[in-house]
Image (cartoon, rainbow, N blue to C red; front, top):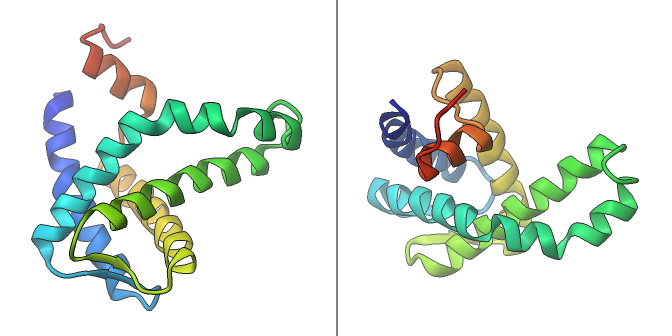
Length: 142
């Protein structure tokens, strides 16, 4: 069931990316194919870079959030990572552009993350990181 959920998420995330591009945020996606590619690249970058980025931001996060006691600070660091992944994907994929640079990356990543979470949760297709890790590693899911 896990692989099917991931396959179903992919085109949904691409459509969400096209919705983000339709909004006046400065995010440009040429077509649905580019949206599909961008959704995959954002997901792959997230899988590959999440631990290095969290390690990079560990000390500032620890200090500013008082070790995780201040939840809004933790959300800000998670969104910062999402902005970095969004910007990297735009840099790597021709046809996926951020017209206003960092501002477009911030607005686009935040709207993309919120819409993705809401839509996937409503459709029952959300997979949290722990379940996703278990699926990828082949461990049993509790």
